[in-house]
Amino acid sequence: MATSKEWQKMLNGELYWAWDADLQANRDRCREACKRFNEAGQVSRRRRVELWRDIIGDTRPLPPVNPDPEADAKQFDATDPVVDPPFSVDHGINLKVKPGSFINFDTTILDTCLITIGERVLFGPHIRIYGATHPMDPAVRRGLEGPEAGKEVHIEDDVWIGGSAMILAGVRIGRGSTVGAGSVVTKDVPPFHFVAGNPARVIRKIETSMDPTQSTEA
Image (cartoon, rainbow, N blue to C red):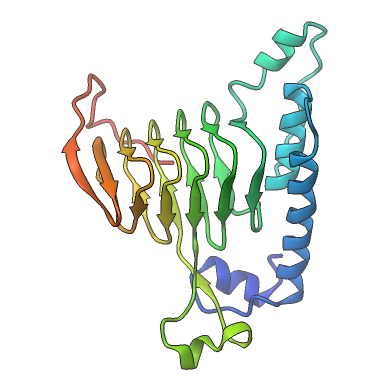
């Protein structure tokens, strides 16, 4: 992928040609990996992690098998998130999710640019993260013939995103914040704040025993 000019332009947030052969090949790869993940049925935590890592292109070796199923599953608590199917992502390899986070069912992510999700993040069901954009000028956009672009999305540690919320391109959600169910987040959320609505707006600051001066990034 790194050899494709369109791939690099996409990651840089520049206008790029979405039908580039390398981009198409990775989308096809990711689509098949998501299909395997979603159709796996009731499988062990180890197998679910293996299928998840295929989606995001994580080539780390799995830990040795522990004969105790519960102990074997627990090995992954410190290394991988918990993700419930069905799950859909565009490229997969532009998505970084830290361990200890939970992604609920029916999450869709367009990872045109880098999407990061920190530790101990909780997703409700039906979450949408749209890192992709199109030119506003229809003369430039030109339907399927025109270029696309994108912006990074960052969700910091200890965030809770309520069900059916939508996170748009270019947004950073600060540490310890909560996004109300059904909200459409169009701009940055400050750390330790509750936002809700369409478009989402700050409702109040969240009182916490956490040290808000201790900065962490997703």
